[in-house]
Image (tube, rainbow, N blue to C red; front, side):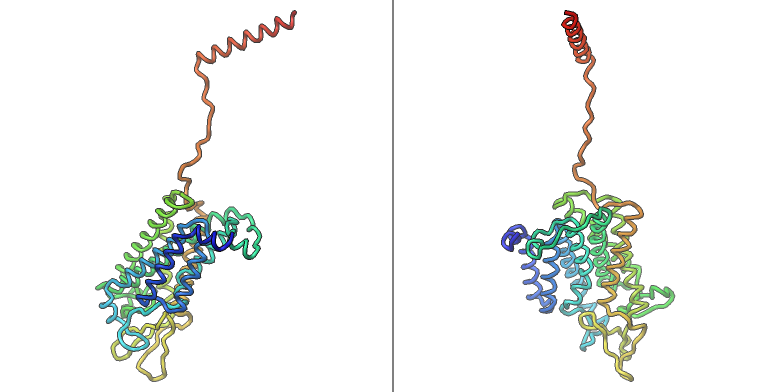
Length: 349
């Protein structure tokens, strides 16, 4: 398959990618490197024979844009930016793009390889057909959707939960109240928003899988598993934030200082900022590990519970021969008896 054929078969996906890139440039949603990373991620998703995964990526970006915009002015005054001024997200970097979709890219590439359905790559690089691992082939789609359910839940809980009137408490020490924006801090409202994000992503996935190839109906048990996995991912993110991610607080205002692009915030000895917690992972590192863990846990649970992502939309019915009506059977028997008599008669002659 050459590039022109690939382009013709993916017109809608390429058009959507161009549209999102244009939107990201005009609205300053992505850095230049972030745009390149976004195009690469979109291309990886296009390689899979199931278009549903590509549209999950697009809709996750859409959902994230919408919830980030909700209460933007209020959120800007709840935290501070490491570059000065009020808090709030700037354009997303390439690291943030890969943190939210990198593990899904790995699973998508592996699943497409196992399905031996990447003729474009095979024709360009001469990659041989993938090995036959039926169990893994069935589990990977669950892991892909679970990854997006988890990052959607985390986005909803962090972007909307911070607007809650409830005072956040530390997930590892529920009796301890913390400032809004603290890594590891959660609210009940935040958990509810996380469940909403996971449910919305799972619902969209079920529609996409039904309307687009492979045209399968999502297993109800898989739907529940994915929603739970997404919410669990949001909680895992908070636990990781509490245990292995530092929180920097401005001494003067008591507000949390956010790093640009999810990076570390510099703290000088004797400066105006204080660091709390273990500085092992950045926010982007936490997001990637969380997404990977939620995905792996979902696949593990699906394996133990024997849950498949989809069922056949129109299951093939096994044909059973119906017995002939008595009259026909009698007629058939008469013919058979007459034939036997005739044969005997012929033989006797």
